[in-house]
Image (cartoon, rainbow, N blue to C red; front, side, top):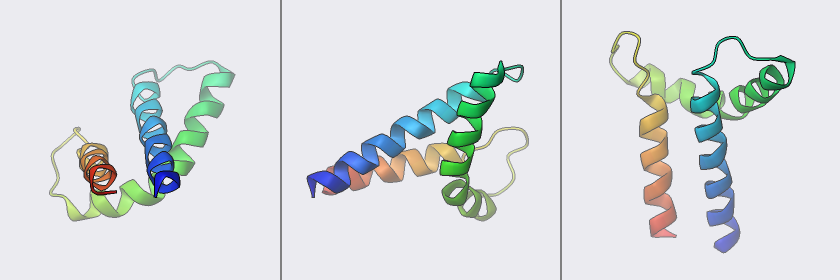
Length: 77
């Protein structure tokens, strides 16, 4: 179970990196590659959650929901 917990913690770090990198629209090439990686790693999870949530305008709550679910899973494991 500790392996799964470790994977969930790593995924949380990737989610955090995506959130932080999204605040900087004009990234240098290395930053764009990092954002591309975080986007590719997180979008398959965030997109279905985003579709289930009501529209909140420019605020995307899907990352927060996924973050909380992962924290709960970590506590359960």
